[in-house]
View 1 (tube, rainbow, N blue to C red):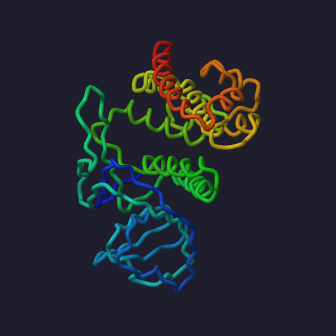
View 2 (cartoon, rainbow, N blue to C red):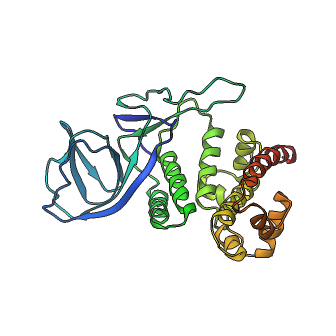
View 3 (cartoon, rainbow, N blue to C red):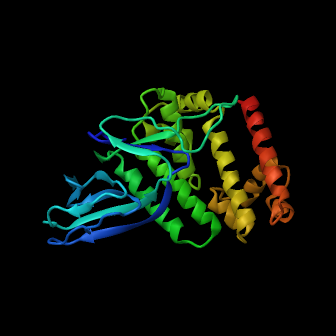
Length: 313
C-alpha cells in the first residue's frame, strides 16, 4: 500500500490511538504552514496538490502530491519555504497515550497496559507507519478520510464510535506490514477492513477478487484460514452488529436501519436478523433498549455465534 521511507514511526496500540479532529486546507502561493511548538497531537497529512515545504526540528521535508507525511507531537513544526504553487491536503490530528518512537527501523514496543499471559492469543500491539511516503492507494484512502470527517461532525452517539473505528481502519490501510505476517494474514486483514468500511454497499466475493487482484477462492481460503469464517459470514455478522448499535442508540426506523447496513429489502433484513438473534429487530429494540440485560445477550451471542460460524464453515 505504501512505499517505505527512511524513518518509521512505531506506535504501541494498547491503548489504541484516537482520532481527535481533521480538515481540508488549501494554501495559495506565498503562504506558509503554521509555525508552532509543543503541539500535543500527531499530525497526519495526505497531499492532493502542490508541494509542502515543512520542517520538524532541524530536518526539512518536501511533501508532494500523492504522499503522506506525519509530524510528531511536542516537536517544532514550521515552513522552511513559502508555497510556490497552490497546495492542497487533508490533515488529521490523532492522540497516542501509549509508547511511540521514530527511528530508521521498525521497533516493537511494549504496551503501557499490562496484558497478562493467559491461554488467549495476544496479537501484535505495535503499528508501523512510514513518516514520509508515496501512497499508492490514495483512491481508497481519501474516501475513507471523508467518511471519518462526516461521522465526526454528526451528533448521533454511533457516529462518534464509527469515526474512531474508521480512523483505526485508516491506520491499518497505510501501515507498513509486519515482516512476520503471512500472505494469508495480510490479505485477510485487508479484506476485513474493506468489508467493515463498505458494509453498507453491495459486495460479492467476485468484486473482492477484482479489488485485491486475486482469485475469489484465495480470499475465501485466507479468511477461513485466519478467522475460520467466510467473507460472507463476516459481512453478515458485521452488518448485524451495526444494526444492533442503531437499534439501541437511535430512533431510526427498522427500514432505515436495514438500508443503512446494506439491506435494501427490510423483510430480508428482518429474516436474517431473526435467524441470528432469535427475535425480530423490533422485538430486540423493545426488549434490550435502555436495558442492561442487552450486555449479557450480546456477550452470549458473540460467543455462541462465533462457535456456530466455526462449525458451519
